Image 1 (cartoon, rainbow, N blue to C red):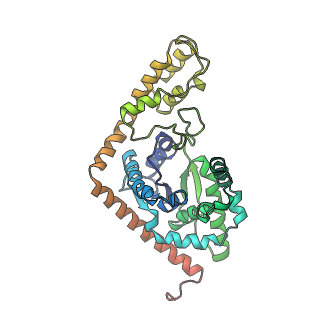
Image 2: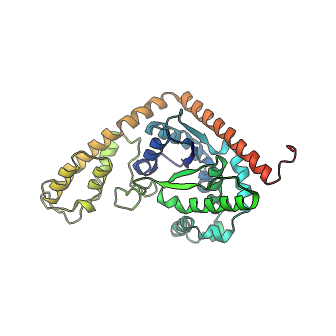
Image 3: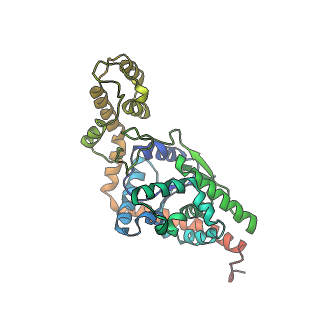
Length: 335
């Protein structure tokens, strides 16, 4: 059975973009692979090193979201990154295999640096090693469990390619040790925001969280961007430029052909359409929120699941690291 490694940084609750972009795929794949899902608290500190309380609180929130969408702890090992010290050890070894210029050339890193410069001005003096070395840490996460498959969003593809380079170089120097991981994209790798932005994002405040209540969902949906050329209720419109139609398709509204036809013919007002969408999203999220409520009322069960998942991951990681140390001639007292 091949191994999957995937996960998220605990920086806040997950939203529909996360669900359709990756979570839905993870739920389907967990039954066919040896699945490890990390809560990347160490990597969350690259942006929140001065606010560890935020990271700690969101570890539980992220676990709740995982369990609520259908991640099965009997099929998947949900673990906390900082509690698997083998990952930190491997990160140090991997850091010798990649140059600083190569890290700066990573397209995702370059984009995030540009964002930081736009928000905070010149950040050259304040770039931390942790931020720049994020792809090295991610490569170590994958290799620590010798992952074959990594389900990711489009923005993470450069990181997976860099992980492949690092693993390949390690194997060339020290002998065949790791699998070269392969990225797997979902059918919806990038989900648009309510405002029409190319990505649903917490920072852009254009998302619907999996844990939003009915009233909040309805209010958010009512702000969704529609065809700007539709001025009056009976004006014909183009559904392809409408975020409401986009989400109707995303959650697989069974009446999607009717929605499209009525919209194009001017037979459907935007307010009516948004209210219908809000009801459908609420219904879609109902089983997810019911599972979330179950686990919210049983915090001891969440703790047990995280402990067991972390212990299973540590066990596998140590098996991998024994081979790493042997191949690197670092097994001084095991000979």
